[in-house]
Amino acid sequence: MSDSLPPDLDGVADWLSAAGHQFAALQPLAGDVSARRYVRALAPSGTSSVVAVYPDGAVEAGERFVRTTALLSEAGIRVPELYFWDPQAGMMLIEDAGGRTAYEEIGRGWEVLEFWQRALEVERRLRELPAASVSAINGALEGPILRRELQQSWDLVLEPRRLVGGEDLAGEFRLALFALTDALHESPRTPCHRDLMARNFIVGADGELVLIDHQDLRLGPVWYDLGSLLNDSVYASPEQESRLLVQARVDRGDYVGYHRAAAQRALKIVGTFTEFASRGSKRYVELIPPTLAAAQRHLERVPETAPLMTDLAAPWRREIDLRGSRRTGAPDEPQEGEDC
Image 1 (cartoon, helix red, strand yellow):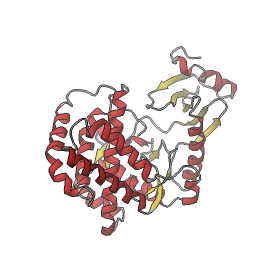
Image 2 (cartoon, rainbow, N blue to C red):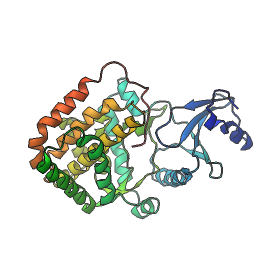
Image 3 (cartoon, rainbow, N blue to C red):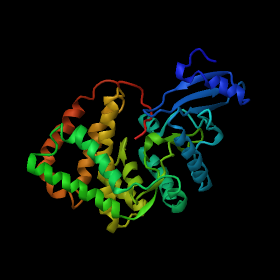
Image 4 (spheres, helix red, strand yellow):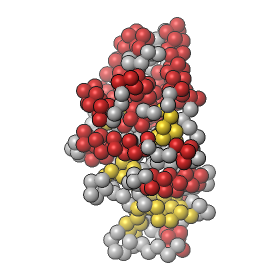
């Protein structure tokens, strides 16, 4: 056992040895806010793999990861290769696909349009997955889930930050958000990753995008993944968005559906980032202002909320500017992936 491993991971060395996997060193990896933990296993040859640890209560997520790995691989979507899964131990050995996410590479100067163009091909292939196979793994992203996600954002951000207006306007705004999620619920369903964005792509050694964190693959609103991709972590300008929607073959008649999905996703993520911060994970606080701005832009483009956003524009802009002005110096923590 490596003395550098934290106590909750000290069984990894014993598990690897018992399974006959040789290693020269183990390196704990930064994880996410889920119960999963990760360890890089360095082989004597210099190659490496990753052990994902699923503690009690999270093993079912490991089972879903196994199934989505097989489904995505069969569809030609690059994901880390699964070497071995031990549900009794709650440990999984997978390919070490690389050290940095697309989000980190973009921060180092990688061209964001190049990322989007590559990621759009993954988004297209995801939509072409067999719906029945996806549905058998996870329940659909239904209206009640979409509404519950926005309720968290309402409770943690919108209401406390006075972004809902006075009592009468707040009531209208709440009903408008319900109407938006109802419209998404009634829209066509397609397979979606559920969290498709730059932090869930590893850039492989050959520059290929490797999709991770895919165990929540499910049927959802048709443009949900696209709304996530262009409005989470890296943000498309209106001009970029117009070109990318054409590239993604979104018909103009479907633009409202895209804006609904993007508005719900961005608003949901604002609440998620805020909830992460309440648990001590501050690394994505700096993403709240641009995500809130993205949510505002899309809410202004859908019929359910557009009439109200004129009256809400001033408090939203003050909040976005205020939060943005606090983003000075280095981030509180290294930039690493989170489950959203």
